[in-house]
Length: 257
Length: 143
View (cartoon, rainbow over the protein chains, first blue to last red):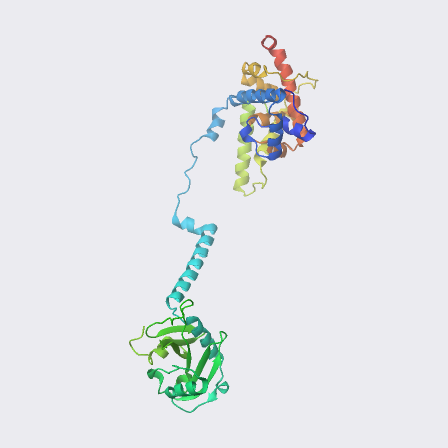
């Protein structure tokens, strides 16, 4: 069979076609060879080239030169060590990335460990605590424990009771406001260590509407503020102050969670 | 490239020595195939000092299916001498192509040729070699 009509470039490529088809690396060459694969002319060229290559392969190489192409290693490769591997920039970069990812995961895991029903709301309220000025509160001169009646009578809030541990604290002011989820929140400012109390509805199960309860007290941190949260009768109470957990721990009963 | 093992050995050693010196001075060129290109030019320089064959128009023949059996009867030295007698760049093209260590694009880069030139040189080389084979082994081709 004759060589099919090929473009000049394809003809040029065919003349340079590699001796073995497995050595074809580019598409244009593969295409040219494919088109000419049935032609006698190309088959003759290939067998001619193969025969010449076989002859070239048996051209003797002087022993002195052949030594350079010895299959033995001229020197032993450097030993693999942990130190060397760790110094490799790619390994170093991957290592740092893994450490960062692991750090983020651990941080998120630890944060999750301290989570409890209502913790997102409590965090938001800690932010509010940090930005609240006493002038926005209604001045009240009473013990914190007595404000339950005020919240019920004036605002219709049931079970917005300050726990006995904090009931004796002297109040400077209080207010009731709605948060971004239209939940009514009671905020109380007491004179003790400029502490603030928050009372807000406990989180409920989306399907059943049942209160998601949790026992004892839970600590929560946000922007330098610490809060201790407990749930009673479907209402969460949070005592918050700027500082650390130990500043608040003194007020919390020992049986906390 | 040279058709002379002793000269080839000398050039091989000189090229490697030069490469080792350059490496020691941190002056290795940042080009692919520089060592092959260097060896090629050394071969061409060395062959310039030899007796040069008179340029003559070689006969050409189409490649036949019997070519491979004709080639099988040759001695490798005969092929080496035939290729080394070819004018450059045909000599380089044939030598590099039949070594079968480089693909055509690498040969183009190494021998500083265009595709059309390499193609023409290889095709011409084959046809000339076929004519030489027919002249050398006439009885084998005409069965």
